[in-house]
Image (tube, rainbow over all chains, first blue to last red; front, side, top):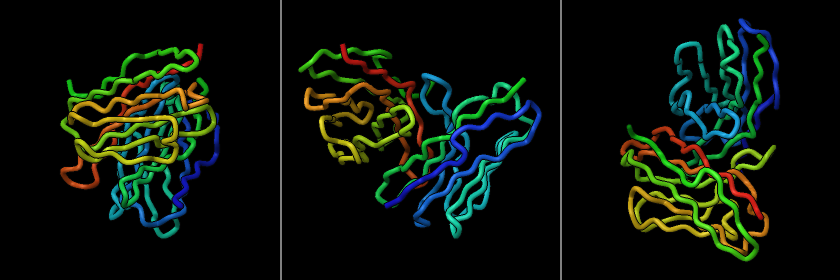
Length: 111
Length: 114
């Protein structure tokens, strides 16, 4: 059974720091891995999608990597800003089209 | 503007009542999904549909029902059999023209018991 784990559950860092969020998954047979952002009381906003054949994707200050052999993905946020404060979720898509989510990391950027 | 619209934003259910949550998308996506989000639990899959007139149970389908009569619409009914319906419900869709397209989400419906 595919499980997705995100550590830490919560993180507070001063503004301007670079930071890394971690995501691990138990089944390496995933088709892709997607990172989302969720603001309180809102839906999920897609940040980056990494195909199983790719190693990383970049969008602005965000960089996501994928290592299927070790079952790990990371989301790197450069030069963090208070507006980056949100919950970040990762999700892996299986061959049966089910998409399994981690419980998220609550990020707080301190001004 | 293409997107996913969920309505209502807030919904209250009385004991023994069925309620229906609406999800409409104009992204021309074949696949649609319903998730339930509880504090500290992450998202759990209720039902999903990969094509019109077809849908599959997710991990927590008991007490819920869906229909997929149109490509654009995937309504979720929370029946009286669902004893703990209070949660945040999220609808998503995904294009399947080529297999690895990202999921897009609506803004959610928050359901509470009166």
